[in-house]
Image 1 (cartoon, rainbow, N blue to C red):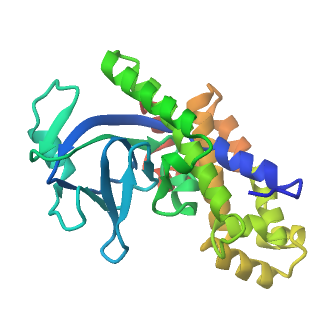
Image 2 (tube, rainbow, N blue to C red):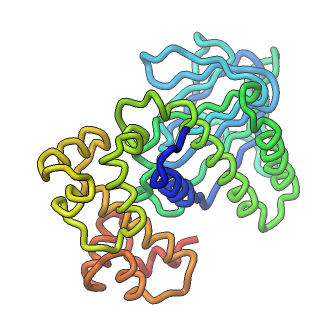
Length: 313
């Protein structure tokens, strides 16, 4: 992404800093043709093709895409998709297969007796849950074609590290795998930015490219604690209130203050897990005038109170 304006780089950096995953579960699977699996989960899902190839399909109308060794595909929101040896092969639910496999195995083997495809499949939650701006700002699927990426060596090392940690079976392996996934995910998001920054017509990238809306976003990310209103944001963008509100919603698919509310909860969620700061201090830093208002807003978005969230693993 070409960042010619001083406000764009800090905005992109802040977006990437908010990427952090937790509580991952990993599956190392070998599929032998014919085979087909379907997956849908309310969490981020990663697939790394270690050997062979397969066909990926997202939704019923989209054409299938062939994946090859070294490719990495990420579903930020866990949208339904299928993987199979051929586009016409019937599928079964992946987790039904896993549940029938013998416990304690490091690698599950499924399918027939034909060509082999080895996949590393990992599911993980965003550390700040549904409030993370990434949850709605990214497309349903991010694809890194291993042979087309300048960071191929880095991604290969990341996949190798995940496998090493899984083989160890150590207590800390889950956390180590999650931290490696952070790197993979940041690479995937960065690649998406590079490929679409100049062509995106809507969404977060288009908003960043729009100088007026982008500057407003930069102000929100830099100071989410300020008492922003649509009027004050419109002034930073040098637009009328109505023109700013309409343009913001057109690009980002939500009103400015809705975006700000999620950004504040995201900011608070990160501080809850990364600091020992008091709830009152975190509420103030996130822009809430009272602890009661913060707790109410946090529970509405996250489903638990700030105190309960802090105790989550």
